[in-house]
Amino acid sequence: MAEVVLDASAILALLRREPGFERVAEVVGEARVSAVNLAEVGSFLVKAGQPVAEMRATLESLRLAVVDFDEEQAIEAARLRPLTMGIGLSLGDCACLALAGLRCLPAVTADRSWGTLKLGVDVTVIR
Image (tube, rainbow, N blue to C red):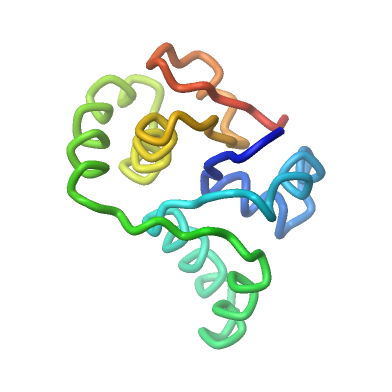
């Protein structure tokens, strides 16, 4: 896989060594992530008991290219939201898909429901 955009579920799969994590490990050094999705991962780690300093170190160790959530992505995520609510996608999911679509990059996720999407965004489901 070449350059990709990682969803929070893919990053968490990597960190927790869940099924499919190997596919994320292959691309993590070239991956982009929306700041929204990074916040999702960070909040999960803190909720699981990691101190903020340790959470920050964990995220930094991944060496992801973090992309600010800007106005263009916000508009695109808003457009995608009603199209994806039927399969339970969150605003964070739409932020990932918006970034991937705008950058013409595949989105990588652990969420199988994304495999049913027909939004013009290439989606790789890791499990």
